Amino acid sequence: MEIVVAVKMVPDLVEELEVDADGRDLDRSTLKLRLSEWDEQAVEEALQLRDAHGARVTVIALEADEVDEALFTCLAKGADRAVKVTGAAAAGSSRAAASVLAQALRGQPHDLILTGVQAVDDRDGQVGIFLAEALGLPHVSVVSGVASAGERAVVAHQEYAGGIMAEFEVDLPCVLGVQAARAAPRYAPVSRVRQAMKTQKLESIAAAPPEARAGSTVTRLARPEAGGRAEILEGTPEEVAARLASILRDRGLVRA
Amino acid sequence: MSQDIAVVVEHLGGTLADVTFEMLGRGRELARAAGGRLIAIAVGDGLTGAPGALGAADAVVLCQDASLAHYAPESHQRALAAILGARAPRVTLVASTAMGMDLAAGLAAALDWPLVAYSRDVRLVDGRLVAVSQIYGGKLLAEAEVEGAHAIVSVLPGAAPADAGRVAGRPAVEEMPPPPTAPARVRFKRLIEPEAGDVDITRETVLVSVGRGIQSQDNLAIVEELAEALGGTVSASRPIVDQGWLPKTRQVGKSGMTVKPKLYLAVGISGAPEHLEGMRGADLIVAVNSDPNAPIFGVAHYGVVGDLFDVLPALTAKLKATP
Image (cartoon, rainbow over all chains, first blue to last red; front, side):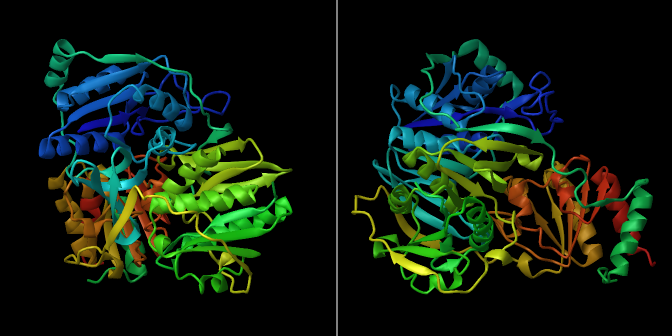
């Protein structure tokens, strides 16, 4: 089975996000990028499936800052191939990105395509679903747990509220948006990533122009109303703890 | 083309989801601004009783068939695409949920309409559609103008009050035949109920909920000590459960449990929208987080900006001491 994992770089939310002077986009000069964490789940699920059933795992991403290191990290984790789609003009739109990816994947073998279920910046929708639609494939999102169901299908669990899940049998080829892998994503030590950089190669495909776009334009990017509603307790940890303890006692929330 | 507003009714086996009423309330405002009607569209089977609860809508379109009894992304999308394509509403609202995600983007692609996802707010201003999306883990809001005569907006649960849309009534009902059957590539097999765990966090009155800020499984001990001092139970955000540090039964949020305890003490939880969805209804929310911009402070009543490794042991000690 050919498993393709479509991954992307997104702003690292651990860092402070600054809005640019126009107030319509992030200040990208200071931005630190990382592989989308849902995509890390998708990569892990692909490797788990490969280990259990045998398959070839290809990771594919559109060109972006720091994407090489992210792709080499996927190779270090055990992916068989890593493909970079170069020259893509799809910034800011999942729909455009999916169109570019779809055109690249038409020339690549794919039975099962996995993506992270969503990303922190997919304002115009989720790449995986648009990718499926562009390729004419069925799709299921919010998936945790993928199992092989013979040569032609997989079984996927879709998570609903309250811990309820629906089980679907999905014909291959298909696209699944992975919420969580069956195990926490494996870690690739820096030494192994360096080794991958020395001994393995990224394949590259030139991007075709996107055939779809968001159809909407951001006019304002801003933090939610400052402070929200929380009353912030100030002071040393001791002082704050004393204040909180008395708030909780006053409300009868402390049993002792 | 019409100026109608459509709401895709979300339900599980005929039980209407709260977000359906939230969308109807929002849809009512949009219909007023557009000068059109509000149409609720329900796909499934055995939905004949549903219209009575959908009184906020001017009309209800039912598409019922045994093959649609259980939600599946492909079959429900096909049925909805036929209805929406024929009626061409100005705006279509779909829930930003596990069921709505495939539908919203799938319909947008099938109909070639723009999609704005994760919306907290949507309005028509002089005929122009403006939608505000909550992105970057809830840290930023992106207001966007949407092009074209039709658009799909996926609406975050909890973004609008449900009361405005929870109106009994007798809206006009139209039955639509299901689209011609095609071989289903996505086949519903069964619903899996959650396994009973050691505790039912939906019944606990005090939850101390832990997130990524705890950094390691070993550090959970300080959270457990605080929960014990409060006579409460430890729950968690998704990353903790995905790491395998706590069982799935302790997970609060979109794909976990929705909880309404008397006290929800969130430690090291930034407050992504998926988490807030599961706990914003708690009576008292206290948040401890090192990031002053963490979205959790937007829903908390009291906040502590600080290091949980300092604050938690101090609080546990204060609670154990006699006042």
